Figure 1 (cartoon, rainbow, N blue to C red):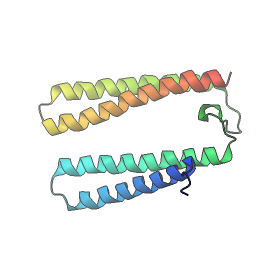
Figure 2: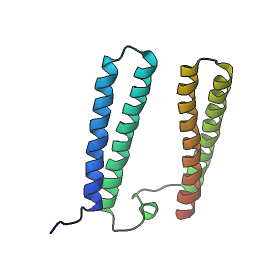
Figure 3: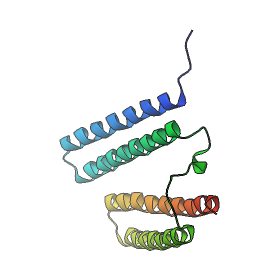
Figure 4: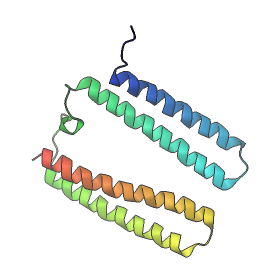
Length: 144
């Protein structure tokens, strides 16, 4: 009888997959002679490395914490929630400024490759903006 794989085992396997993908992207990138292709593979390599790090932190958290939702997990340290909220709001402003600058650059270039790379950056900035808003909404509420 086959046993079902645990969630933590699935995370461990996915970490290995992300790490091997990052290595493959790095190796492939070295063999390319096109600058944009190298940049795109480097972007993929960094994303896979980032994914592996995030999953490692998830794994560390779920293995230490009692079975609860991740938003409920607390790190043992004092946090001034008012200061943290203001800091995150400031970071939100910075992310928005960066997004506007990147969007301006996208509008002013006719180079397709440059537009593609800048659009990837803009997507990340939009995602960062959304992440910070979520952190302010969820984490600040939970620490009141």
